[in-house]
Structure formats: C-alpha cells, structure tokens
Figure 1 (cartoon, rainbow, N blue to C red):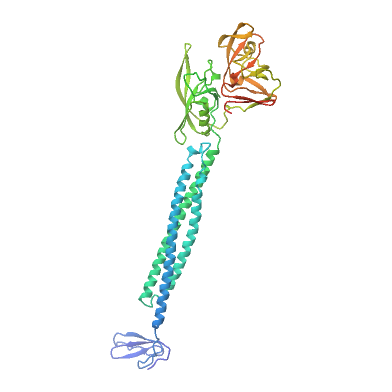
Figure 2: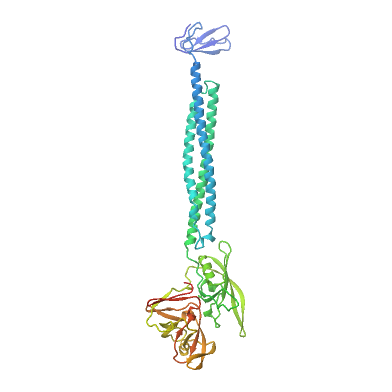
Length: 470
C-alpha cells in the first residue's frame, strides 16, 4: 500500500496491525490498541525508502557566516562605543551648563536687579543655550549609533545558528545594542535637564529685566543735606508730600514746621526681597538707596526728629514703615539757564527773580554775586511775601560808615524763583538763610543759593545754574 510522491502521510502503528493514513489510506481498526503517528517526509516511498536528504553548509560556508557575524558584532560594538563617547562629552556639557545656570540664577537675584549698574544675567546664559543645542545634536548622533548597532545585531542574529562562534558574536552584538540604548537614554535625560535649565534661565532673565528697568519707588519728598554743624548727619527732609509714602512713614519736612528743622533720614531698609539696609550719611547716599527701590516695596525709614520743649531742642530717634508707589520725587530740579542781560563788576550777573510765600508775590531785579557774603533782600519784600524774621542782626556797608539793623529769615528753596526763558523756576533746592535790609537796598543773591553744592557757570552770554543733585 503506497503513497503518491510528494504527499505527506502518517504512519499509524497499532498492536499487530499497521496501515498508512493519508490521502486514500484506510483508518486504523478500532480496538487494536493505542496508535502512534509518525510523520514520513514528503517524497518517501513504500517499503521505507526515501529521497536523498539535503546536504548542510560546508566548512567554508560556516566560516564565512561566522566571519560575517563577528564583523556585524564589531560594527555594533563600534557604534555602541561611539555612543558611549558621546555620553562622556554630554556629561561635560551638562556640568558646564549647570555652572552657567547657577551663575544666571545668582546674577538674576532681585536684590542685584535693583542696582543700576548690575550685570545682566543674559551674559551668563550663553553656555546653557550652547549646551542645549549641542546635546540635541548629540541625541541625534546617538540615535544613529543605535540604529547602526541594531542593524548589525539583526544581521548577526541571522547566522547565529551557524556555530558557537557565530552565536557568541550575535550575543555580543545584542549586548552592544543594549549599551547604545542606555547611552541614548542618558543623552535624552541630559537634553531634558539642560533644556529645563535654559527655560529657568530665560524666565529669570525676564524677571530681572522687569525689575531692573522699572523706575525707582516713589517716596514723595524733597530733601537736602543739612548744615554741617548739626549734631546729627544724614539727609534732611524739606517737604513730605501729604499722602505720599514719606509722610506715611511719619516724616515731616522743614517747610512743614514752625521751627525750620526737618526730620533727618539716617538709613533706609527694604524688606521686600531680603532685608537690605542702606546707611544714609548724606543725600547722595539716599539717592543711591532710592534708585534701588521699586514701586510696591516695603521700606522702613530710620530718622531723627527735632523735638522742641520750652525753647530747648533735642534730637529724638524714630522710624516708620511705608509702601512705595509709582511716581517721581522732585528733589532734584533741572538745571536753570538764562541770558546775561547786564554784567557788572565783582562777578555780578543781573537776574529777574520772584519771591513767593503766603503773602503777596514780589518780582524784582537782583544780582547773582558769587563773591558776596550773604544774600540780602529789602526787608519790606520779605514781609510782604508773608515771611517773619526769626532773629535780628546788624549789617555794615548798607549805609556808608554806619551799621543798620537787619533781620534773618529762612526761605524754602522753592520760594525764590528766577526767570528762565520767560518762565519763573525755582532757584535752589534747600532752605535759604537770607538777610532783610531796611529800605530799598541792593538785592544780592550770594553763595546761599549755592549752599548745597549747586554750581553756576557761564558760556558767552548764557548762564547755567546746576542744582546740587544734578
């Protein structure tokens, strides 16, 4: 009983009975015992004879397959080594980026952002941005290394069964793929970390720029250096605008007291970001402190207040806190300019001036005399403008060979104005000590108007008076 060529058949072996089950074969007889199926290869013939078996690869072919597997392994290993080298370079870039990121954070501190001459943190962000770009390129390179390693490993796997050496080479190639994958994960982590630092740095720079470019906080006061013979030194308040932050801290200006002695600021502390205290030995130091504040800042101002009891005065330390607002302090007026209409001897330059007060405003001609000893006005002008003397003295030279009674006055800086290009503008920033002379005496503006460091200069027929803070 035979099977046609090319058809597979199952050989069923039973107890004393056998038959072939296949195309056109008979089924086994029931009850003849347990059957076991044996597959006979296609092409077998009855009687147990078969077609010749195929011949395996020759030794030369095996050697070639092994060599290819080893070459593939070498390619995968090289790709993994390149990926590992890229990781080492990436680690160095991450360290550089971390240092630059820390420098950006340090430079972007709010306290530094307030300083007019602070270094912009953007100057330190360059290495972080460069590292982020380089690591992105490194990620692409390692991805390429991984692709090459995987292709080589796949090729090695196809001949892994050739012999033991080919199998070892295939296994090594797969290990190289694992190393390349690990390298790619490390580079991806580095890209993520440096990108985060770059984003944080950009946000810090934006915040720094907003603080740095914002105008200083508004105190709402005018101020000037006090006389050098006072027992306390600092910056004297001339006027604390009602409702302004300075007034909210309890400060009272010289022009707001019966006795012309304003509160003297000795320090300013900003508690907004970190407690930063600026000593105030003079008004220049106060201006520097003000320049580092911003609207919305919480500040504490330490100052001395002149307390007068029974005609005796004493300095009492005090302090007050306030919140700064937006605005502009008028403590430093712009430089004044004018044209010299008449120039006399003794450095005298004729000016048109105005004297304002609670009474009738007075306008008259005066001479700026930088060599004069004191500023003198007709006493009648001072009284008509609403001023009262605080002391009396005598002056010589008003009447040849005689001394006359004179009176001392304190004038707010804004009370004395000079005609500048058709308009009257304040002549000085601080309180002036002037002398009232009876009669229609010569009106002289002496060094008193320059007492706080203002500078007077001329160029041809033009004159310029620069305020002390300008």
